Amino acid sequence: MRIRVYRDSDQDTLIALTISTFRPFYEQSFPQLMNHDEHVITHQHGQWEEDHRWQVPSLHSPAEGKHVAVAVDDEDQITGYVAWCPDTSRPTHGEIDIIAVDAGHRGAGIGTALMEHAMSQMRADGMRFVELGTGGDTFHAPARRLYEALGFYVIPTATYLRSL
Image (tube, rainbow, N blue to C red; front, side):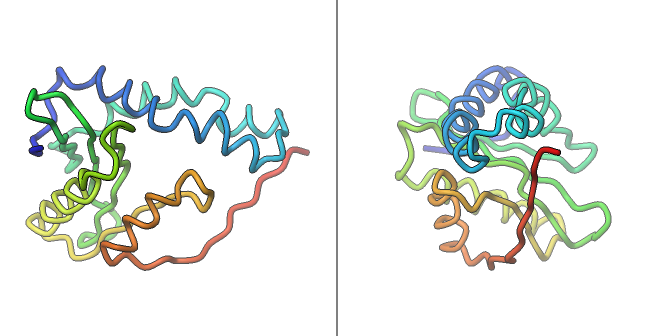
């Protein structure tokens, strides 16, 4: 496994990887969390696939300080990626926008390597803090374990949503 910089030719693969990675959340975990309230589900994530089709191409823009790195196997097949950017309101503060690892490659240290790579790059760019957000549900439990193993602190917050 090696990590390389994003190429424009990676876009379709990253979109597909993002959709396959997060499908179980949007189709199983989130509906359960919302007690299967279709109004809330549709309002919050009704077009989640389209949202990711829009999001992924916007993640890499070095002129804006936005970067994507991809993990590839020995055949140069993408196995995961991470995207990060500066927090423009706090000059020494970076953010991890998203990290995704292909289901067939999880547990092999790819997520750790991608996170360490992103943090190293942020450090080199003068950032001294890094922030990310994740869910508190069971789907996101492996991600939380990764972040905690890397020394991230949990900032407890709660977001509430309901239909009217």
